[in-house]
Length: 270
Length: 135
Image 1 (cartoon, chains in turn red, yellow):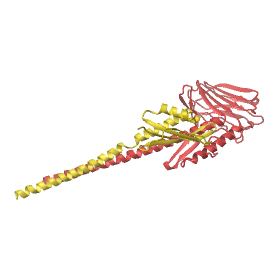
Image 2 (cartoon, chains in turn purple, yellow; image 1 turned 90 degrees about the vertical axis):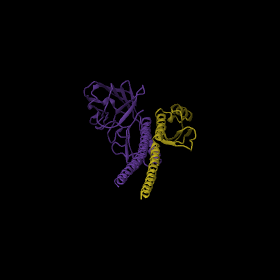
Image 3 (cartoon, chains in turn orange, yellow; image 1 turned 45 degrees about the vertical axis):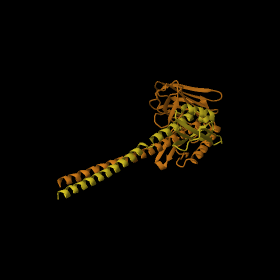
Image 4 (cartoon, chains in turn purple, red; image 1 turned 60 degrees about the vertical axis):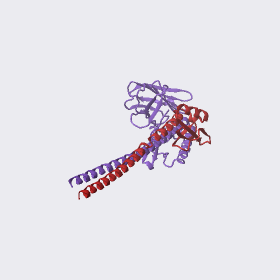
């Protein structure tokens, strides 16, 4: 009788162990399957995001007149201001947005004009006569020198009056060019902190300012001649209601509501 | 009395063995089934799809896709594609240009697929890829 009880108990315990084992294997199987699906979805979302942001940047760089380059430790930012380019870019942007959204149910490219949601340019071909135009560049690393060049036919460069430069050891040059003359200012600045470069660009107004600011978003990947990737956070802003604006901060938000994902695109220059 | 006693034990023993074998067989086959399913969890297929995505991204970043040149795209794809895989790429742009390069995918096996958007000059478009293991 005692043995019978023992056998029954052992059998019962073994059955429990076996069932537990089956349960564990079943759960492992479910978990790995779900993991593969999640990884697949994230891969697809990332790939889509990467291609969209890359295409937007290519459109912007190819059609807006702004170019950024890095060679031998020198970051060059050039801007050829042209309203025809602006209109073309905006047209292309809207076309691209429609093209993508008609094919992707869960992708939304935000083209609202609220702050920092897209690249946009406002009408140009007017003089700089407001005081709050500004340029921001952020988080530089291993940059020996920076050259910022503005080409604009109607800029009154004779009236630019440099007021201040913060001291440091990185060469920073701003060049304004029009059809007849060039104004260049070069100074060693400290790029690890905010740099204020104030100048008067006015014909008949108050002062404008040029700023380098370490705060802000906008990750740029710049390919060097050695084909290595270098990342910089750069935000360029001419912030004025009627003058030139170049916002390159958080180009676009792409949402994937089905997966609960929201991606904030950042410019990538390849 | 003695005979009945041993006969009862034999019956119990036989029943015990049958139940044990049944439970063992049940657990064994269920375990084997789920373990085999778990090993076929899609990560290898995911890896292959990611490979296709990476190749298309590389073609995009190096400007090959933007060239809209079917032959160049085909040749570069062959350079990048590891042995044992085959791939097909199609692309079309908003301006109406399109090309289709690579082999026709096989229907009897898993085919990884995906797409990218790209811009070239003032045109933009969509590129799709299919990748699978060769015969």
